[in-house]
Length: 373
Image: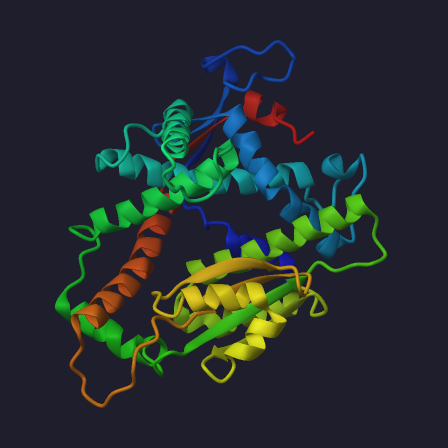
């Protein structure tokens, strides 16, 4: 596989019906860039505005630059976004990638609305939620109450925070019916993953993927771009790990190692335990702190910036670190771990199926006028 396939793996395989609709059906544009509130597409019954598309394009921007540089040796200059590289155009590629990311969010938010978990899924609804969250933070600070994260969330940080919170609630709601596992399904799943989920007490076994952003010969602007690109690479790696089954981990790692330059991306399987803790404390303090926090965590992945080594690090733990034992009888805590691990995979498959069959209507006139510049 090449890097292009990695990008395709990050994106969804659409079975969706994509309709290109003449923009005159919905609005008229007289040769100028559409306003932020102009509709560019519709996912099922949910509209997407120019603003939403441009916001997601900014999120994916650095990754697309890296993709074209790595795949085609493209130079990032004033002509980059309009250039053609073996039939691929960066701007169109970026818009398509952004659309596919937005599609999943729309599917999840609409489902959450149908379940009564949120009031609405439109851009205005989400911005109202952001104002409410920021108001709550202002009131908490005024009352000397603790808050988690920044004092005020901007739009991008809020969307990451809000979608993550909604996904957790949606996952639990679906577990009562659509994704509710039978005892037999949980038993079979436990047999598949018990070696990964249950290891020695006070031990974390984990995959570690690191991407270096250290370049001494770059100026400040280039260094910032390089660091931003490195972060996007590690985010792609995390997306791959979370979308694929644990049994496919080795294949995913192989793809990542083959297609990202080995001088900047490294993968190891490591163990954090009482014997190795002091080494992590001295050489990788940020990672040490996170591993301490995850000693009793569920199967998880997380990204940290490790400035001591000038690299971003992606950690994928093998699961909650419980004691080895001979008996097959599980405690209530362990049964919940199995259930949550099963539910994470079931939810990912369920959302992927819904996204793949979503109807996506593209309003061609407005959509093609949206630009990254």
